[in-house]
Image (cartoon, rainbow, N blue to C red; front, side, top):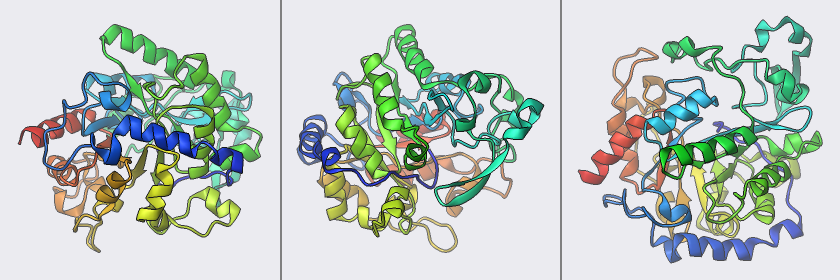
Length: 393
């Protein structure tokens, strides 16, 4: 997941046609008016166990953000595996971008200079280039300029070594996984652990890739169908910062769908491309949320949309977003909780070291108290402990 989204060209009337079906699906999965959703201050962690689909997940749900990226280089099987070991209910595996030959791989962004050792491969020096990605000039190496076989010669490295120097120990250990490998890994882990493993893939920059002839949604849907994971109760939640990407997926598969939401004043890139003037602030109004509920089951807002910060970076009063989203049957899985000081609200930091941990348990408690249904975290073990504190406190 990125902090700023990518978006998709405006959907056709045919793509919107599934909204009625999806709304009924949302009601069936979530219960009218969000009746099965977690309410602030109540013990919900075991309420959904034994159910089907989203109902089988504990609330608040702990989602391993790009795996266990607080401890291992993100979007690697080492990171995904460790997230499960630490107790994550869902693993965000992965952010999906295409290769030159049409395969889907898991990387935070299509630019891989910061997450792989590609710069150390002289045979690929000529691939370095500058592209405009969702309006931003970006220099580096891009997955769409490599075949899968070429990408498989690379190895993952830590993306933010200044904050996570210990993770650099694992640089070079793991290759770039494909989405198909993730789907097989999911089945294998479900068998060996005796517990259903959930994943939460994201379509990255779908408008950008569709213009290159590398549409993401059809490729995602084809693989989900191949592995029998395209149903309403399949353990795969799909997400995107581009609402029209979710609308397109809504016509292709029956999986639970989530619209990611960046800062209030930002615009989804598909809106920019099509001249839709709306911002995220418009999407989180009651009317905007009702529209989203017509084709999706949830939203993934930045945590600042749930509890804003003041000019000093301290948490202020929660917004009405949780209540408003629940009123139309949407779940909320905001992002991203991290243990290190720079990523925490100012009033939960301890000291000034960039890689030192702050009072993350206090921050979790504040966010859980708003009634969110789950949270993305780089540190699944911390999230699991914080949930136990909240539920049993």
